[in-house]
Image (cartoon, rainbow, N blue to C red; front, side, top):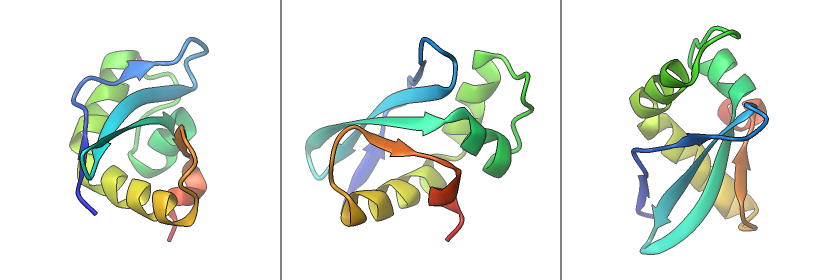
Length: 89
């Protein structure tokens, strides 16, 4: 599976998710990454501002893409939401 993540995620209205688009084998897939996952697995402080969240996302794109691929294989429904448990194994 070939996955490319967008380089411009946006923060959800409630501030709990970074929303982004992934190109998955030529198909656009809407995705969201939980702020809690960024805090737990990407060392983002709980009070971090959006630029810090975006930097963690950009720095962790390879790891996020792997978690995204596993999630899509198990459950292909959209949007794909990545939470803390999707990075633990």
